[in-house]
Each structure stands twice: as C-alpha cells, then as structure tokens.
Length: 264
Length: 265
Image (tube, rainbow over all chains, first blue to last red; front, side, top):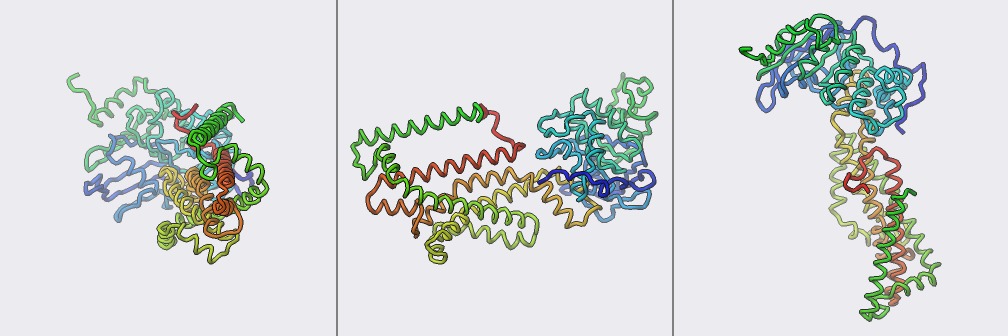
C-alpha cells in the first residue's frame, strides 16, 4: 500500500533546483517567550550562501527554536522577518535533519530515503536514492528495515534522506549528538563533503563539531539569549581537529563559551 | 509452525486437559446430577450425537460474528479517519461516538430485534455496534499520537510544494495512518473478543437460529449437556478467531514493537 511506485522518468523530481546557487538566509526574530520569560529578543541570524553556519550554545538557550523558525515548524511572530538573498520564499527549499533519525519503522531503508517524493505525490527516484545510500556507505541495505540497523547506520540513512531532498538550504539540529565518538567523526567528514555548496545551519553543543564543520560559528548564550558576531574559521571543512593551526580558534571559541581556564 | 509456536500450542492443550480433569473431578466427587453439571465425556458424546444441529447453528453464529467484525471494522476505521482529518467532523462525530458508548449496547438488543427482525441482520448489527467503539477509539488514539518528529519532517518536505489540504491528506495517509496501524491492531484484537458476545446476546433476545438460540432452547428443556456442547463450540470458535487474527496482524505489521523483552521465550 505504501510502496514506492516504479520510477517513471517523465514524472521525476529531477530538475527541481532552480538555476543559481543556494540562497543566503536571514532571520530577524523580534521576540520569543515561553511562559512569559523571554527566550530571545531582537535576534538576527544570517546564513551565508553556500556555507555551513554553526550555532553553538548550552541546552535550553533557544538554538532549536531558532532552527524551527527557519524550518517553518514554528510560526513566525508579527515583527519577525525571514528573507532569502534571492528574494524568493524559503518554504519548499529547506531540508531538515533532527538529532533523532526519525526513520519510519514500517518503511524499508530505500523507502525511507524516498519518502519526501511520495509525500509530494511524485514518483520516487529510486536510482538516485540507491546512489546516495552507497555514498553514505549503506549499499546493499536498501531492503532492510530501520530496526535491523545500528544507530550510526540509521543516522546515515537520515543523512541520505536529507540529501535526497536536494534542497539548497539544510537545517540540522544536533544531527550527530546521539552517536559514539568514532561514528560521529566519520559522519561529520561525510556531511562536510556532501553538504558542500549548500546553505547549512548546524545547531550543536559540541565546540569540536563546530570547528570541524563550520565556516562561520556563532555562540548563543544568556537569557534573553544574544548571538555573538560570527567567528570566521580558516580553511575548508572537514577540518582536522589535531591541526595545531586550529589551537587559537579553539581557545577563542572556549573563551566565547565562557569555558576558558583561568591562571593557566 | 516454529518450535516456539509448537511449545505454546502444547502448553495450551495441557491447560485445557487440566481443566477437563478438574471438571470431571467436580462432577464425580460432588455427585452432581447431569442436568446441573454434565461430565466432560457426556458433553463430548452429546456433541458427537448432535453435531449436525450444532454445526448448523454454529455456522449461523460464525457468519454473524464475521460480518459484524467486517462492518464494525470498516465503520470504525472510516470514522476514525474522518475524525482525525476534519476538524468540523470531529466536533460533530465525537459526541455521537461518546453517546454510542454511553448507551449500553445490550439494552439496544431488543430494539434491534424489533426493528431488524429475528434473522441475522439484527445480530450482525449488534456485533457491529459492540465493536464499533473499541475499533474507532483505538485507531483514533493511534492517529493522534503520531511521533511529532515525523510530522515535522513531513511538513518540511511538503511545505511550499503542496496545498494545505493535499499536504494534510498526504501526511495522513503516508505517515499518520501507517504509524497508527499497531494501535488499530490492538482495537481489532479487542473487537475479535467482543464480536461473539454481541452476536450471542442478539440471539438470546430473539432469533430462530445460532448457538445462542440453541443454548436457550436446550436450557428450556433441561438439556444441559447440549447447552455445554454449544457453549464449548462457541468458545473454541472465539479462540480460533482471536488467535488467527493475532497471527495475521503480527505478520502484517512486522515492525511494531512486539513482546516486551521479559515476555520473550
């Protein structure tokens, strides 16, 4: 009942991406409060076109809320402005990846990757999905159900599903935080490669992840929260965290997070 | 059948045999006359002697139960879908659903017989009514408890691409319905256990056939052994129905969280 239809080349989602690169995105959130306590006021976020912007900060500071505003999952308040550099609306151009893999247990791995097309009433482009699964290292697992996969594999499927959407803007909410250190490191490398030339917002609480993946890194802190000016990181992701040239960057980031060791 | 299944079946048979021994002991030691409590062997002999009558009435009851299950399931499923999808429908249908549950279905049985006659229709209606609420409530509960992350994901995948109605419909059928199937399966298991009650109560109130009719008839003539034979036939049919449905549902929904780890053998 919920199987993918046979691929029909005339009805596929192929040339969906418009000409021109990914857009820059800016969000001006006027005020957001929970139970009368302001989470943030007059918050401005700018995502540079084709770059990975990392948003760092402690839990509960409102990072995810900001991401949900961008994803269209939380209604914008009056006074909020969400704009793209190319002047077109952001809705329909966003792919969303959560900390949880959100795979649907009744669908095979392949059908999970192609669920977006079926939700849009289009034929699923299964050849491309299989190629993406191969790219994330899951060739041959197309027919498996999610329950048969490890946590790392499931998150790889989620990454493939995000890429299958082929959206110019990708919003990721702590996508690798539930993984073990080794798997996380590998997936970060993979993500940096496959997210090249997309406008990405990566919400994370891990400074090392921000240094490994971000072009621009923001720290969000305080209540009501404020966003500092972006740190522009040298070089291209994925960076090697053992690179001595990154030590000043790490020191600066630790200081911004208020974690600098004193008197050392 | 797997080894595990064979073990389960053997244990079930052992339990049944144990109950038969207890039954026989009560009859022998208590010195009860057959019209109060017939011995298992007498019941078995009566079943063999009257099997044509029992099978004839059993088939009528079975048909009522199965038809009731089909109609109740279809009505319940469709109602839950409509309530889950449309907000105005929810406002109008929810009260009807609650009222349908507030009126004891047994109290309706005489009315149903009066309106629909002594034939099968009133019994099918009875079985349908009795399972309508559990099926609707279970499915609706499942439809309302979709993992919010799946809905978020589906929303970002369809925002700006489909109209609001098409988006809601696609999310309903591609995400919420499959996610609610295990809940619907729970409702169907309850329905399979309740449907025989509906059919037999309907037959007791007024009928010209079926196991309930046969039991009432035998009771009037003090044929307690025939009553027991009919009762056991109904029990066996209900058990077979429940376990078949359970097996089908397990096979149809292999992803649903099955037994708790403690229950695995």
